[in-house]
Amino acid sequence: MKSANINILCISICSPTDPEKLGYPTQKPVSLLKRIIESSSAEGDLVLDPFCGCGTTVAASEQLNRKWIGIDITHLAINLMASRLKQFFGDRHTPYEVFGDPKDIHSAVALAKADRYQFQWWALTKYTQGQLMRKRKGQTKE
Image (tube, rainbow, N blue to C red):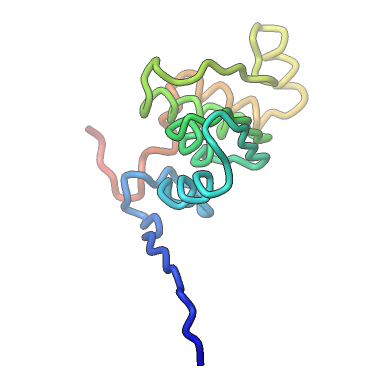
């Protein structure tokens, strides 16, 4: 019988206390996404994540010099991704544009009328610098 070479990838999951964990139950470790992106694309390629949640794919793509598009329907997720890019890359990240975020009082009022819960998330994340999801159960104030 011929033996096959088997490659095993060992990547730990994000535990609830992992500093990488941002509060999304389906969040994957950055190391896993980096491995997937490295094996399926080259530098400069475009990576699309249509359900990006907290932006792990976006962060991994940025680290690996890929172009990226991250899509999510919640203002909380969009602001969390922006906060994550700022935290990990400072001002050295790829410039990006957010579509659908209120840019003035008229679009903020329109969002409030269309979906009051998304308006709440948008307003809270704007005035807490995206830090809403960072507090974990049992964490004390600093």
